[in-house]
Image (spheres, one colour):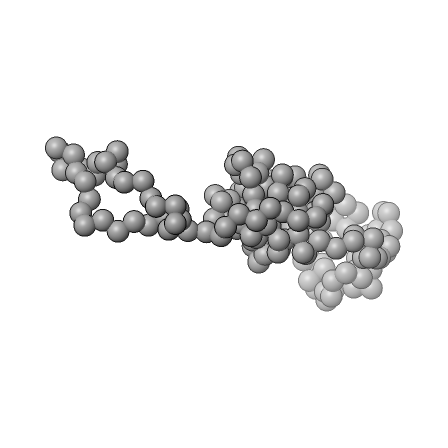
Length: 155
């Protein structure tokens, strides 16, 4: 994207904007960051996925996903492709870290996270707060959630 100041806009004989008569922007005034190649395996892998999902030729490490044409629906597709490639991905993180380098920096070794065992036994009739180690919910909130799920706690 670029902005070029013009004394007046070229018009067609009908008084409409003549887009073909607009001058090409001066490359010195193009908006955006200078291209810097991705660094490291994670950035290189992510850049290839970004380019594929966005349908562009290359992605630099300081390129912003949304400035390259990304939006919420494409973000979901990107996250899916990143996960298929074995990379940690989350739409919320992409929204807060929209550049390739920043998103790659959020990658951590998944093995460092210990996921607690499932404390809800098969065929469970009622879920209690003690069974939910990843969230803090009171019994009334759990009951509302269970009531909204077809099959209840057993599901």
